[in-house]
Image (cartoon, rainbow, N blue to C red; front, side, top):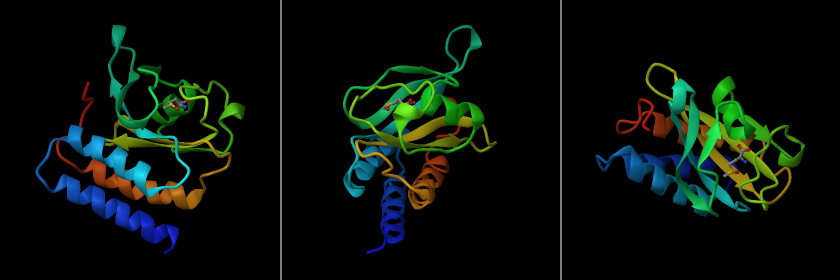
Length: 164
Ligand code: SME
């Protein structure tokens, strides 16, 4: 089976979760479980959600995930997740230790891919973060495949505004 076919199946499985008429919270929880199961060589898969934070400063708050205990709050613009959110650009990082400001929640993480998630008007409302203990684990096909999953989540079940 090709990698592309795997991601098509994964996106279809996540879509099936959204069709139960559910709330975005259990969908994100089950989506992180599906991603962790479907992709080899991962140590963390989950979501950070945009929050207004204190004094109107935006930050990312830990959402549903699979993996080790993670940082609760990440400043907008900090680390790989904060950079993806601030720039509104996916981040494909082959060596997290070479990424300026990388936040080492799980010291096992060596590479990661982070995709911004948007509401209906295009604002960033969170990120999908997938980490691997293997350097250079992710390539453009992973980015595109996880983009299919992100698209399903963006269109689902009330996930359309800063949820926290
Ligand atoms: N590595 C991330 C922090 C989140 S954890 O890896 C789960 C970052 O630098 O944004």
